[in-house]
Image (cartoon, rainbow, N blue to C red; front, side, top):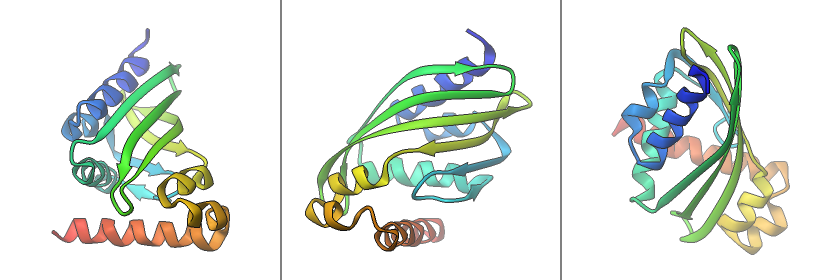
Length: 155
């Protein structure tokens, strides 16, 4: 196992243990993060997002990770988030594929990919099934998440 694989394992172990400070210690200060909901976060915003998500889970988030691979420059992992979506109290099991880039022994770029329609069907039920594939609903999901994030940052 190489250093970057150990770094990814450290990140997901901290995530599974709800330890955002240790998660953030894995990131380069100039880190960039994106996923289908949070499109483009940078630096401290990335850590704030993880802190918000962990706080919002109220301890009801289960993280499993696997398939950790990397070389000197890039890495990948698969992880599964199992939780109750706070807005609807519906159970979500989200399968996420992560890609990483490294700089100075830390994660400089983190990109998570998942099926937002599959996620929205679980999170919103029939409404997600019918409309979750549309750009309109996906944009609405992104906007609501960004509003929640800005509110969290101001608190």
